[in-house]
Amino acid sequence: MNIGFHQTRLLVSFHLDTGNYMDLQENLFFTSALFGELRTMTGTDGISDPAALQVFLERFGKYVASGILHDGAFKLRIEQQQADGAWTILNLTETQCNKLIDEALKSEGCPWIERELIYDALQLFGWSAFDADRHAAAQGQTITAMNTAPPFAPAPNYA
Image 1 (cartoon, rainbow, N blue to C red):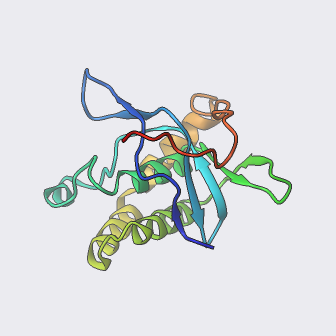
Image 2 (tube, one colour; image 1 turned 180 degrees about the vertical axis):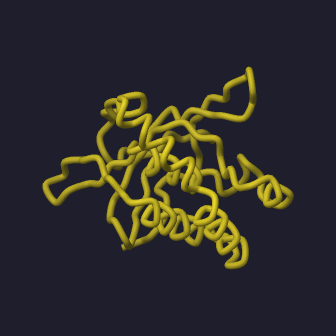
């Protein structure tokens, strides 16, 4: 099993009114040692750690796919492929969501010290975002049908 993202490029659209949010325009696929085959299609504010960490972490920098995956897990907008090939919503705890981003960051080559800072910041400060996202999901504000593209469809060739 090769742990990591299936795509090397993402098709996104940015919110021009703020520039602080983007929407994924296609499924993002990730193979996890912890949770198996996953996919998400959600919006994200990128790697949104506390302002002190933004000094060296770009919100929409090279680890944005990990941020998207984590946001999808927080928002209940992540699916897991079952043995029969069906996709079902994966309801992770906050700690499991944070372990997932740590695994994703590692797969992207993020250095240990940066992963540790991100993980610790999420453990200390991420609870409010987790609670807000789960409340919104319970109100039906974020759970919608996933993109129905077949799983593991080849990524578009942007070259």
